[in-house]
Image (tube, rainbow, N blue to C red):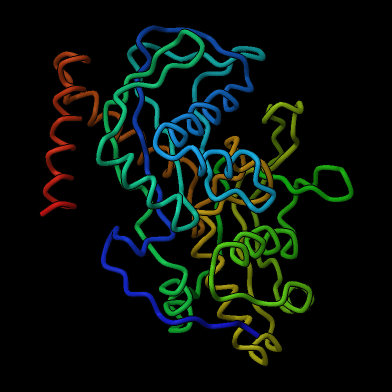
Length: 325
């Protein structure tokens, strides 16, 4: 059964925050192509940003044997054979999440004094806008909300290729045991409320079922070890009548669905795979919502360089007021 700790209050993004998601809007300085495993460069750049403020945390995130306490998305450029094309006039959204207190604390420092560009092997992306993409939370708050029955919809939408490791192979299917196992590993590693893994997964196998799905397979490059076969699309899980005999496990499933957008699903979530949203969403609608923000950013720019600096300075001023009073 879950082990409980003292409750932690949470008021926005503060010193208690354990989960947060940021979205950066990037614009390349020129049009160019990169190899399809471009996410490895974003991964390295992010860890270098951590190192610049907290070398010990960067080393832990790179070398630690526990679950990685962050995720990053890819950049959705145009596919050209085995390459990705980025256009100078386009703005691209890039998402980063923090999954424990230490990373969220670092991200708060990063946000207050943000970089203005990303340099990757000679190419430059200007950072034209920052947003909080996923609200600041604590694991305790997620657990309490789930106990109040505030997560009855157990649907998930997978925006980037999602896959699991099973007996040294890729499993490109959202089987309940694999999906909730991937979340539980991260939850048990970072949260102060934990469940016994084997008992919980046995319960998942008996009590969590797939009610409907719309999926397609997708083969992508990820990390340094070649291609991965995954899936994108939507799935709705449901609970059997016998599930109610273990209310703590029902509460845990609800909690894990809330955390899915922060955690990502499956493996290689620090290389852009497994980007997930809660709910049965039209993938096109998610893309359109990002496009609307991108277009808004584009409309704000009379001059890319001038407007970018204005936005960054305005954000810095706002955050100094927010955090320093």
